[in-house]
Length: 228
Image (cartoon, rainbow, N blue to C red; front, side):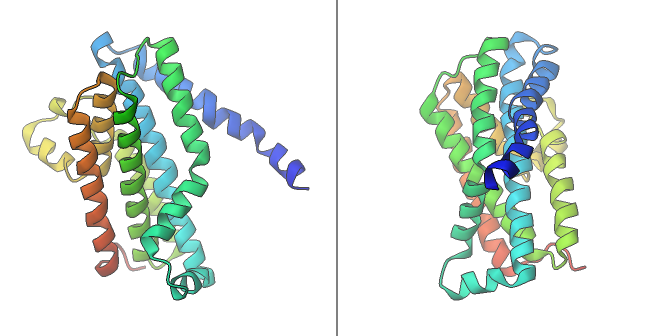
């Protein structure tokens, strides 16, 4: 029965894992100058991190809180940030597969080689943490499960396309550039892009992403985003 059920999702898995990242890379990569093709890769990876991890953590926590399972988990002594990361890892396996596909497609179609695998892994790990903490803040801070589903989708897409993800941070005017530092995807994209170049500055942006996640972790204890 499980095998038959899984077969029904194969077309969707293939589309979102292969064809959608390929389309995003071709749209953004083939229209960009060679010096900016790395942003097509870092932006697409950031898109998958933001959309999948933020949504999965926020919506899973909202559902489990609604049915009472979250309270049982907390009563067992599991820290909620650990639980949030567990959700991200369990639900984010397809996204990790997509990231691998994106990197391979980027090298094949755009001729962009990853210069530092360790820096890239650090960037992805820090991005998973910050995205998990943002998802946790939304999942626990918004009372209505339906509102969580709506706002998490809106926010993840906003952070993927309106933040400096597919283009350099320096393209933004000075006043708006400062606001970009309030968006977690800015740190994620810069860390991934610089790891592609092999720049040690990637580690600093990864630390910034980790710091952003820590702030969100503490904020989830005291703040609520919306009250519906």
